[in-house]
Length: 231
Image (cartoon, rainbow, N blue to C red; front, side):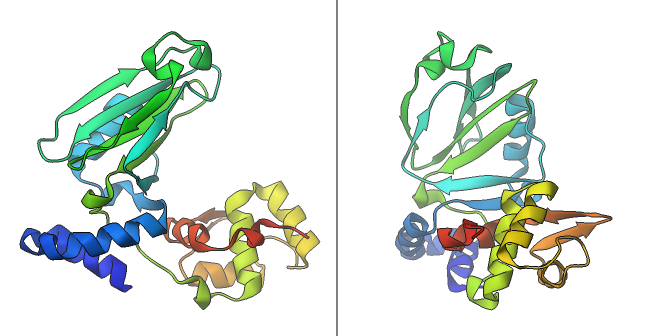
């Protein structure tokens, strides 16, 4: 486990050390951007809030350390936006819903704006409806208490970095085209790069399908944007 994750774990499990550790965690959080956390690793009350208020029941969720967050109407027609302000200390929360008409709605959320993320809280921003449910958790950098499984991009070859990025970016058809254009061989579960990424826990092979794991998503988030190119 890298040093940053060790600091987070130590601060989370030993409140008496937080005065010393939080400045270090805050500094690293401002640099690392968002990361994905399995729902099973979140506090149970937060998982219940996600399911009850945002209809969010996916395998993992992106957590973004920020001091403020912009809100707006839903991205998809037939969905409604949702903003949930959570006090992590008391576990109390307040939910604001947008209109199903999205950006054309009349609710304060649909009109847009920016909210500060309290030092003791988190803000869940998402949408749900006929087009599916989507959400992110914005947490104040002072309150980063999530544990993430890390993988250094330096552990991957150049071809593995491209392959992992393409698998994360595209569906099956797009992956086949990207692999071919980049000279990574024929995309599929028997591709040596896919097998290597699976052995490292970055993707999971399920029958004829390939899924990016939480560890894989966090690794992609650390890679240079150049690996998104297919030429």
